[in-house]
Length: 213
Image (cartoon, rainbow, N blue to C red; front, side, top):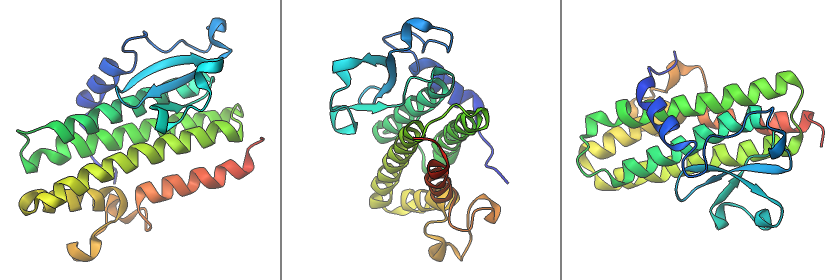
């Protein structure tokens, strides 16, 4: 059974950050943007358009996650990725959070954002409009935010005490990690034997092979 999600909080993060600085992501009918690529600035959690030379060598090392020019699909994914980046940054900097609030304020919204990425990606595949390079970018973005979430949980585990307990539970809920320390209990009601996030990423890799280059 999927985790209960605090949708209002997730919506707040998405709407507050998805179009920051440059405005909302143009829709698929915005022909002026056809030669541009949607990117997420990982340092600020903002969604932008970039063109030509500005994309040379772009990647996480330069602070940009490339998501392609198919705005109908990449737009919602970019918004979810940007929201996740802001969410994680807030978690890392939050000094007054109680351990028992982690699931409600961070784990559930993060799971909701992963769900938005999956839904948009699935819609693009169903419509037959994605190339392998598109899905590769979505995979890279999903792997990036999961890695950032994982690092944030590692920081909480290092605190010890209740923080370590709830952080391990969170990683177990999302990806069946630390199940041996939690009496063999796995997350998501056992629907994903290898872990929810692990299976999401593995499915994307398999789907890439079936898409045109």
